[in-house]
Image (tube, rainbow, N blue to C red):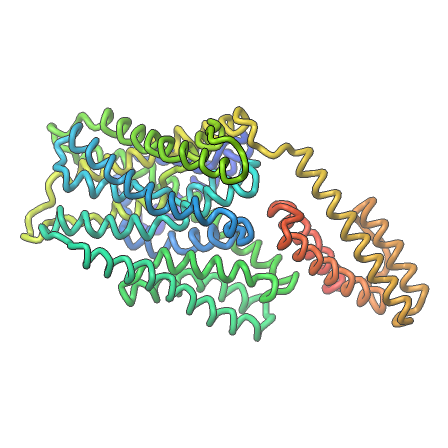
Length: 514
């Protein structure tokens, strides 16, 4: 079977599995990993070879961009302190813990154990976002989990470079070298992402062509990644920074029609990429196991021990952090189990650790094969698989058990309340037009009736053209601006904001397309 046929087969199979996962209400990433494991046992799997470039350059940038664009800037400003502690401190502690546990339980030397720790220390934004879409977490908690997974990659990449230099190149890196690496990777990535975001925003402010906008949206993550990597900075950081900045400016850079089209285009792309990449994670493990030597066959206890170590370290880190946050908000210095448990269990590993795993060098600086590389690959991929399967299938029940989930009734009540508020704002705008005598009274009466019909039945049958259509579009623009202000002021949550913005955009298109 040719390479193109294999890729098409994987895309088709992964799409079917992902669709089936939605029907039975299970997390698609976890089911896709299981499907990948099954395919990996088939003879066809021997012809499938995943390269580091395929994951890090082709698949990863758009997935990271979509995750970063979904991040709530308002909520991020509220949680930046705990995010910093998790993205830096927890990564360092997790990498060290995994390194020592691996060295005790496997033939890997301590230096390679630290390489494994650096690979697995950071949570994965793609996996966390994909698993979290079906969870009704409070906005601040959802942002905390997503932001941590987005911003801990720079720390992990620096650790990976240091550990690789010590274990593979046989060299040592001093504190000066660590500081230089941090500035180059993290600082360079931030700068590259900001420059790309500024350039793209300048272009997008001067075009309203939906096709051009779609092409720009597809190119941005790759442009940010390649630009940063070209100057030896962190491509992952650049993509995330560009996504967050452009996400903040999205309302100013697009109109309703373009927002709807970009949502459809990116929704399709992300569905396909996630479907393939999570199945590829499971697909890798059987082949890697076949390459193990006889002395390395007892890898299962080590995988379970490392996976458990990562969770235990997260819980131990989260308990005092949660207690301190509760104390700062005026509560007692006594941690509850709910938030640490959910945040710890939500820290899944996925695509970013896979890309780092595939990039582990084949040889040492002397040209000899890297010892125990196959075992290192199996341990890393095995932990990723355990994380996605075990945590993925049980995260939703844990959230329900913790009582942290926002009830559907609460979300619906907020949605209805804000829709009525927007209708009142629209009525006030109509009164202003009436006072100014800027439109015929009959047309304004028609608009009032349509607004009430939209509130009651969410549909209209009137003529959408002429003065009526123009005023209705003006009313929708006023409502959209008011919705943005309510969100910025913290009156509504991100989910209600997204639902109502999409509703207003669809209404706008009814008048635009007429």
